Image (cartoon, rainbow, N blue to C red; front, side, top):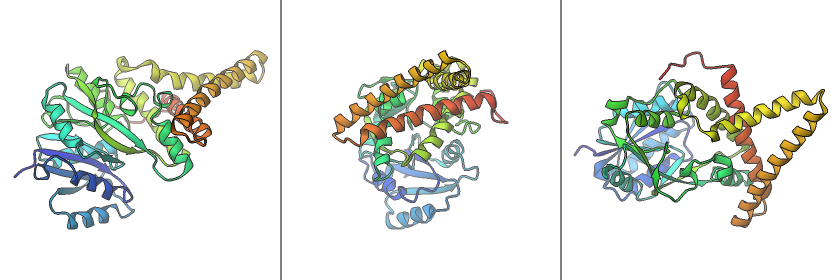
Length: 335
């Protein structure tokens, strides 16, 4: 029997998490006979492919199709997996995630209500390692101060939204809006959902659709991630300027303001006081967020680590955004 649901997963060097993801998919309440998993691997070098093949050999009740993603990027992986999919319904997941047992069933049921063309759920963000900093990063990545109004990271209220992570949609939607934009190396989900809105469609957030998402394990990896997010967010906004929101403007404006004040402070005393006041106020806000999380989770160590992670997210996102103004990608087509 051909599958009704195709679960597509971009993958690169995920040996540490891929077996747990496949175990979670095998434990779904949705009938395994009606599911297939399509993993698009971007040339993993850490044993990921061997781990997938070993898992497939031990579990023959779930179809797992491993395909090659020669371009290595996430949007290219999604398109490669889409091309290889046989299901009527597409459920997009990430190799850093672990869906709850009802994830696929609830995604399919929500999609069949015809509330929206794309439906997605909430992330339960988990540390990417057992270290203190990994715990702080996970807490920061689910705090409104760190992530703005990205409801899927903290909200329990269902409703229509601009975007969802991952998402489930009918394969026929691709015929209407096209595939994922391979010229964007990040923000591909947001751009995909923007095209849904452009045709009059809707995107629905259902917090009952839940998955665990494993955050970056250290500040260096977090900094690289948010620099990339900021850089490619600007490229996306160049194509869709009407989609810009106040939360997206704050980090680059803040970083630009700090840089300007630093330069002015070299010869203007008032700028020094303004710089001090701005950084003091910012430190107060992020420390207050750290204190809130530390009290809620009853872990004193989060008081300092969470502000460090939030500041890394803000400054790197803003700096990446500003760098995108100075140095746009060589090929950036207009959508």
